[in-house]
Image (tube, rainbow, N blue to C red; front, side):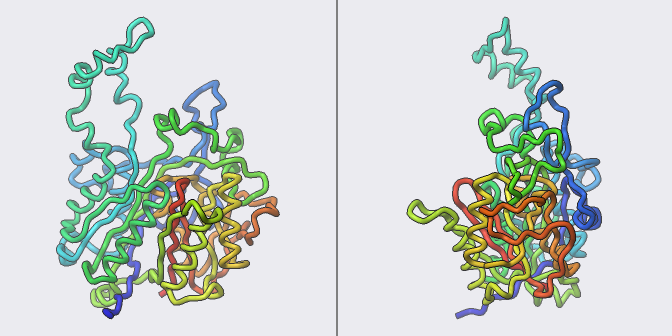
Length: 418
């Protein structure tokens, strides 16, 4: 049996509601500064959709090269590209700095929606006396829309742009599986390096749940209605939680084989010790996929539950999902402390797994477990020991990061200090 190569992390970059880049991001986590705000999109309407984790002061032109490429990048693709730029900068890798045939990209994505203004003129041309005339749509759209409009919104374009920018000729893929997209990207990149198919991989995820278009069919039933208290709206595992908060963001993580990283004198941030991905089946109890992903990741890492310093939970802040996850964590990991970073920035969709992985990585780098915002009243139905109020030391130097979806997919990734 061929021995698997060790996979390490040498760079991380993020574009998030609590900061762009490592320093600003960590400072917000350490100081308990939320990125969830009232948007004011719909004056006079108290809609739950009107609060969210929004990225402030972002300008893609600072990162996108060549700059003209922005014309075919929607907002979340710009997030993803920019996070990859920051991660490679953090890793100390410039274009041409590694063998391009041994450099690859896997990015997590999802449906990216256009801004409402992009269709406004076309829509109005089809509207007459309060009725929408579908027969006018094709002609109007062909005339009014930007010819390369679709290229701006295809989820695979993030990996394409990043691959082109860094001349990455190795394995390249896009994973579109909702909230586990980013964590699955990291898992696939790790597996590629373990098998010896690449020396360096850029793993990432980018999401934008704040666009109003998907709310038309997703609805707002699962959203928090604390619209007058946006920073207190997302409260995973708290007894008074009432729903999730949407957000936008991206993160990228540079992975390398340990030998490659050491040979080039890289600063190693952490090791990807083990991972697992599972699917809930119809015949097993709720949370079965979460339990199995945790157990399989421990087995893959060769670790015991007692070796884990804390859990970086999915922590969606919905009543039922938190209950199921908390029970699954307790069943496998007992009283291992738990933190839930969505309390800072909300549900970032395909970007969530990657951004939350960045939380784990920076926590390991500082030797602590980040805390959970808004955890004030323990829920007896959620048997987990939530870290709240302040950073907690992590003497074990290991964290397990969890993500899941409404349709039953679950991932677990174990990261350890170097």
